[in-house]
Image (cartoon, rainbow, N blue to C red; front, side, top):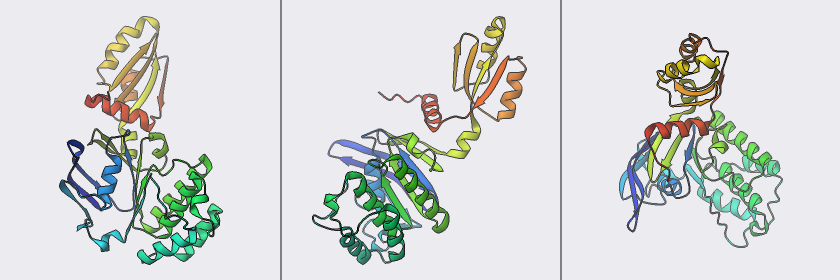
Length: 298
């Protein structure tokens, strides 16, 4: 388990992270969401032992990460700002990483090299941005890490390759207990792969949720009534303590917490003409949660 306790980080007089506390379980895929400048990359660099926090600490199964080569041998970081040694080929990078990571798998490397359709004799500098991303993923996953950190990893990959990489990650989580932490500003990129999500806003972790749990305790309902019953229906729907309630003519859209059966029973007492529970997207869940907490995004 990764335990993050009271992490604060300043750059000159600018506070990048403020008292971040979080636990990430092994064998999970954790999505770290936030806009540009929210502190995602800074937090990942602290988690991987690249930056030292001004306050707080990070531990892996009770062991500190800072200047701990034993822990770092189990960590791979795929940065959004890729750097490769000039004139290196893919095979050169393989040899370098193999000398550092004791669990490096030649079999996995050959398997992924074939899957990606890459030529290991090619100089990495001659490859496109998308192919360089593939090289990062190829090398990183061949290291067989226990912890994989991905910062905007899907940028530069086409839709087919994105789905392929997601399947690779999910398979390693299921088979080897990999813990993957994926940072992105795009909620939709992570919705179909992550089981937990955390939202960074202005350097603070303002929200953390288990996705399955969030989708069972929060519901979006569309319901319509006879015209002369709408005012009374709006009053009663308001008593559900909704996170949001919108009315357009005789059609209401409600986002509320609670059990689906209980909400359905209460609304059916109003004799609606039509009622439908609509699956919430991850984006809708987070916007609703943030509005409920009163956060301003300006």
